[in-house]
Length: 514
Image (cartoon, rainbow, N blue to C red; front, side):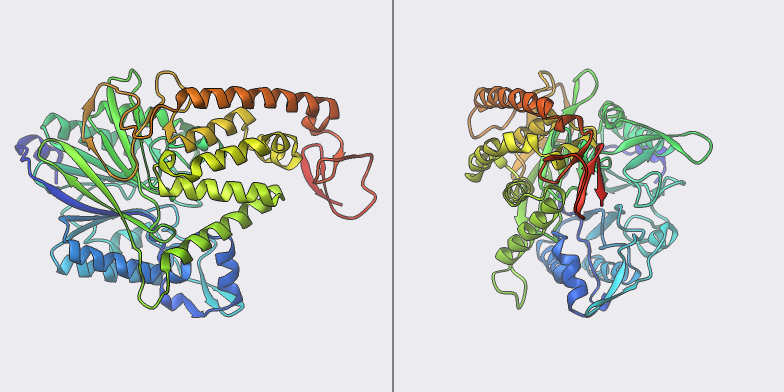
């Protein structure tokens, strides 16, 4: 579809029903030769249900065939690690939808062009699996976003179409592992997208964007911990490298172009956040959908209404054939893997438990309404003094340029479900699971849809108390010298003159095997 066609066709308002999933991370059954230690080791540190991922995807497709939506969308990470066999499995299932008259569209995620973790699993052995490249991706998914009838940006796997009268859908390629554009939209792609969004808006059409990485952080400061959490703008330097600009640049310009809804994935959390353009004259919503390959295995049903609103309902894959109490299994696997990951960084069982449960709370959405929210906040604050004295945690945070104030904003913002936590102008709140939002919205309304009462004063009191404890802990660290990270320390934070036994020590801010 050409840009000129956007300007000539009159908009038609009609309800459009959409089924949305993200991050199915399908591991094709053919890659599991024999289950055993190799696959178990992978699962131990992976919150996804790799060994059930193909069965979950089967159930998703079966659900779509029952629901019969007008559109079926996948916002990236179709496969575990870009394996050819896994892509073939996904494509075969998508053709079942096509044969049933359901239009399906996909965009790639950071795992879909192959990573170093693409394997066959055979008892205690792993073997490298064949992966695909961008050319193969476009060919394999030619009927799901990359066909001759689609308008495609020539330098990436970005596309634009009008799948229903009056609705313009733009799929943006935000890069893949090993690429300088991983979690990045190039300036060329950005200009192409902006031009089409502006044209569609000027023609009175609704614009919905789909991409893998978040447009802006749902959790305050998360982009400091994970550099690819929120998408960046990449300006080429002429030598193959790029200069990167903050997500705020893309957020501002997409909102100004008339984009009010962006469908994302990547962070595996079911969360809706909103922000505004530079002068807060336009609002933009980022609807992030958690991976269907991990607890609680969500999918969304969206309805574009004739009054230019979008109704959002969240559902779950609750059963798999032959699997007893599937949801309980999924939750146990997620909690276990998260605890294992957290312990690797912090060497503290209680802290690992708290962090694992915090993440589980977040991936489920609508955190303030969960009874566990206050319990976890109390547990976090109880352990805060010892967290601040932990050399390992100080190392982890400092290596990412994150302070304890940043970490507190992350935790409080997450538990209170607030974006831009503590920002007097941009702090906002949105319901995550079942709500109705405008597809395009002028102006800014800050907090909206709060069903659990105003907790801001209570939050402020907690922040002040935590600030007092931070000051006390900082004084203690300064006296002990741990905060400076100079000299030799054990993993428990005890200063030693020089290691006398073999083991792992911290020296001048680095882990040293002695």
